[in-house]
Image (cartoon, rainbow, N blue to C red; front, side, top):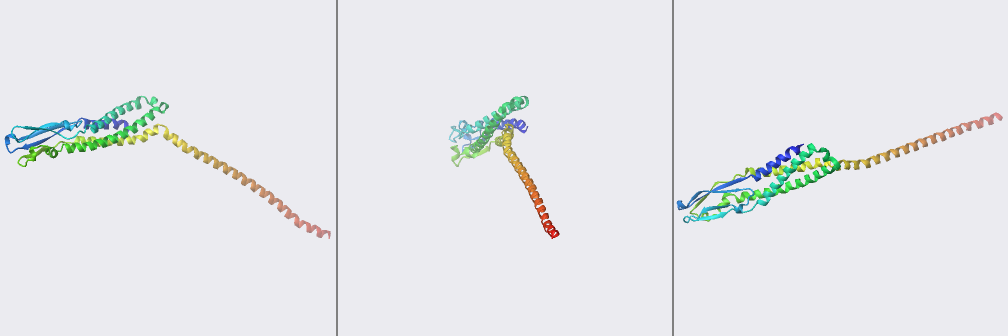
Length: 265
């Protein structure tokens, strides 16, 4: 039930917070010649974070000339992989919910449904772990590449001590941090569901049956051995009593012999 409720919801949060992101930073270049300065340089970037395609113009502080620069890095592979896993996990969760509710008999027929569900759950658990880890590393690189202090190092005019360059506004990464958190929460959710899906496959019950059969055989053989031992014990006791009775009779006849002999004398 938790899987049916939380899996689509967590998947939505994961790809929405990452795939729907757009942010920016603002720089200030104050030249010695104030007319050449630009105190509001806006640099916008968004998903899928192909930062090397994000260009912006800055003053050179040498007249009206402008320098065209671009951010460094392409982090689209990890971001797109993460979002793709989230979208497919969301679609599969919806399809599985429909099957659980409306096609329960078909799901359990020939054990095919639980088997497919088990395999897909294992695969998505692995994909969530890989995708979340890759995107966490990618997000760390995005933060470095969009750090205003790092971007200021790319500007030629900022390398001159006479010009003053400042970071006015840094990008807000809270939603991207949330996407990483939901990525690992999805991994925990799917990995935890592996056990419950495994129990539906029938392998769990067959394993228990396999373990119980040898125990039953051992118990039956023990009971048979106990029965034979009791029979043997009872037979042995009966023989001992019979032989004991015979010996007592013989012992009783021994004093009779001398008495008759005395009478005859």
